[in-house]
Length: 113
Image (cartoon, rainbow, N blue to C red; front, side, top):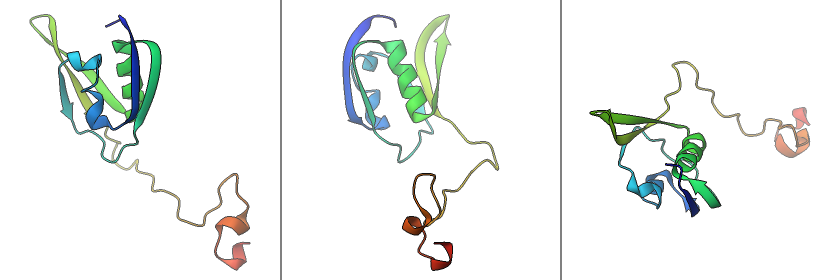
């Protein structure tokens, strides 16, 4: 897991990440992966499989668990993280003020300008 590799994952959707070398040599079980996730851009001249998996886990917000059979690793289970019930925060409606834009640029309502 700690051997160093050169990788170039550009515009890589999560569905394709686990098919790329050098991590394709590991067996995966994919569960509840996030839909419509952004694409990954990971370029490195020296990175380990372990570091690649950590980058993928952090970027796509997935958890990875090594499944053991008879004391030996058999596969990595990759699960999308579920937000706790009631924790959903909807996106801000259009026209709300962002920290770096003046109100007259974002708000269509003259009363808010």
